[in-house]
Image (tube, rainbow, N blue to C red):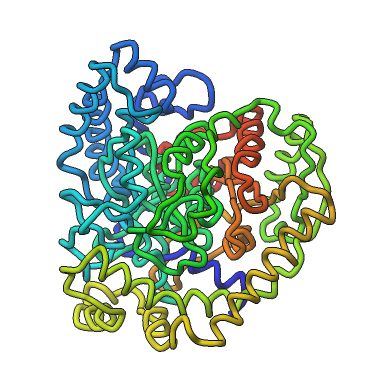
Length: 539
């Protein structure tokens, strides 16, 4: 399996909905506007700092903010353009907001996210009235036995979890021929920039929800591309952190060697605040031991001079998939230079050395990791094993297998597990060629602070016959290495968003955030969607 083909795992899942054929657009929510520094005309499209300022001044309450977002979800997600990004609402959200308002009134603030509404992907366990299903009907109605560490951190920070977002089912580790953004439980999520086009995935709902302004913040998860690709395709900011900066405990897994949660927001500033809230060591996740002291105040990195003097490698072997996208990114490279960056054309080495072995590792880890989650967080679920999930899908094929199969589940079931010598060899191969002979090598050889490239292709037409249609992707090097990756809106091709990526070595989130913020503030490329039925190719 080639590397480019593997990106399907980070980008896929689909169900048919009737889509209008014309180019007519639906009116955006009142005041919809991108917020990258200037005041927003609607508080719902504002960032964390502006919303906090309004609450501090007594002009806004968390209760009111939550209620307004719930109203927008009803108007935009469940009616109107019907984005279908939210799979379930938290019935306790308003009550939680009211409690946080009382705490604010009493002078107790939990942090910068106090009272701020957030949506989280439906593979992150919450110990509340909501289910945690990874989009699968096999887990419909199943409530987690405890919070994921990420959910716990959000609550401690004072965020209001208002609901869960749809996703590519099983984080798109179900089929070799899936359609992104579809799950048996949630149906199809649609792209706010063209309703007949795909959101990419697997964090489809989180990306679409942010684009459409359905909450202030969102959390996604990634194994390879599942944060950065939908973020790019839906015109928002996404951060895939260093493996171990954010705990995986309580997140329905694919593979512990690459899985991580991360922020998906409308601005770099909001992403930095959200990352600071969810990062940190967790005794239930050994990989986070190295996060001690690494969970910095990422908001301190938000500097307008974040690009000045930075030596950045332009990863030319990740250009060439689309002349139109290349033209957009070439224009943005001029902005990086104008902000003081030193650009060097480079080729990231050995990116063809871990395509097949990456998939081998993910398949080997999937079954044991999933079964461990089910034992620990869903002990009362009707499915206990991978074999149970496969059997459930076969029994309910009319609902679960109507558009594509479960080839990855079947392949994972056949893998011998984590003691297999072939698995250990594949994992060592992946780390060698993505880390010391990949990203780290080019950074060291060329004395670079980061790499940049187009994040990926534009949104494709959702297609239940032929499956997904991909452009290029820059997700795999950082994903396989477990290194940080930040994507920022860079412009548009025929009205469809394009992202630019900043990638570095382990634990360089703060530096990447500084570069991404300086670029974002100098470019201000993001503009809100207007929910057209399709792309106007004559525009």
